[in-house]
Image (cartoon, rainbow, N blue to C red; front, side):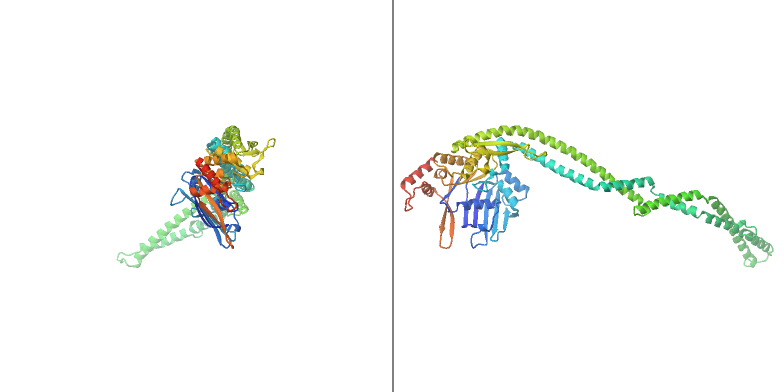
Length: 572
C-alpha cells in the first residue's frame, strides 16, 4: 500500500508531503492546478523516463520519494529479497527514491541502495498500476492481458510451472548450443589429433623402450672394438707365447724361491732373505689376480655378441622414433607424454558427445512436460476467456458503454520452442460501436473509453489481481449522471479490496471516496506554486459543492450546491 509521497522541486511544486490511507482516494482541483503533478511524480518514482523539464525552474534537481507498506505484498517482498534490496530496519517498509538533475541525469534508489532504472521499473510494476489516458496505461501491453486472464482464472500455479520449464529448457538449450559450437570448432583439431594418435599407436612405443634400445645399440655398435680389446688383454695376460704377464710372474716366483732356499739358519727376521719372502707372497697374489682377470675376460668375450642384423634393426627402429618425434616437434622421450595428451583430448570429445546426448534427452523431456501443461492450460484459458469477456461486457453496460463489446482472444504462438506464457498469448479486443469490428485497445481514440474499459476489467479481476495499488487518471471523462455514480461505486468497491487513487472532475465520484485531496495553484508575478491539501469534512463538503458547479459570478458557492454536496456525502 502507498503510504507517503514526498515531492521536491518537481514541475511547479516546491515541497509536497502527502500521506495516503487505505481505500479510495479522490484527487480534485481546477483544471491546470497541477493534479498531474502527483501522477507524474509517482510515475517517475516507479521507473518512468524523465528529462530536465521536470525540474522546477531555478533548481538544481527534483527529488521524489515514495514509501510503500509491503507486508501484505508477496510479489514485491519476494522481488526485494531476491535482489537483496529489502529494508534492514523494517522489512515491511519499501522506500523508492528518484532524483533528476537540471542537466537531465537521473539516479534511483530502493531502500537507500542505488539501482538501475530497469530494476526500479520492475519493482514498480509489483507496487502500483497507473491507468492514465497516456503512456502509463498497462492495458496497452499484451503481457498485461495474459496476466489478467490467468489471474482471473486462478492459473498462477500452472503459469509458474510453464515459466520454470521454459526457463530450464532455454538454459539447457544454450548449454547444448555451446557444446555443439565447441565441437564444431574442434572438428579439424580433433581429426589431426586422431591422425597423430594413430601414428603413435602404430609405432607401439613402450614406456622404457627408448632407453633400452639406446643401451642395446651402444652394446652392439661397440661389440667389435670391445672384443678386440678383450682379446688383446688376454694375450698380454696369458695367451701370448712370447712372454705374457703370467709367464713373467711365474719366472719371477721361480727366482724368488731359489733365493729363499739359500737362506741360512742364523739370519735375522730383518734380513734381505726375510723381505724376499714378503715379495714372493705379493707376486703369488698378483699371479692369482692375473689368472682371475683372464678368466673374467674369457667369459666377457663369450658374452660379447656381434650381430649386424640386429644392429641394423635397432637403427631402423630408433630412426622411426626420432623421425616421428621431429614430425611432432618434440623430443623422442616426450612421445609417450604426447600420446597421453592426445588420448585425453579425444576422450574429452567423447565426453562432450555424451553430454550432448544427455542434454538432447533432457530437452526432449522438458519440452514434453511443457507441452502437457501448456495444452491443459490452453483449454482452461479458452473457458476463462469467454467468462471474462462476458463479465467485463456486463460491467461496461453499467458504465454507459452499452454498445461496447470486449472479446478476449487467444492467438497461437509462432515459436516452436517452449515459451513462458504457453501455447498462445492473450489480447483484449474492443468494439465501441455496434457493427464495428473489434480492434486493439491501443487503437481506441477516446482516452475516457479506455479508462472505463480498464475500470471494468479491474473490477472483475480485483479479487485475484496481484497489483495492490490502482491509479485512475480522469476515468470519468465524458460521463455524468447515473454513469458517474456507477463509476464512483466501482472505484469505492475496488478501494475496499486494495487501494485506489482517482483524479476526477466528477462530484458524484469524489463524493464516494474514503480520502479526499484538493490540488490548488497560487501564482505570483514571478512563479506559480502547486499545493495539495487533505480535506476535512467541512472542506470536503465545500469542494464537492464547487465541483457541482455551484459558484456564482462572484466565486461564491450557493446554498443549494452546499445542500446537494451534503446529500452526496451523506449517501456515500
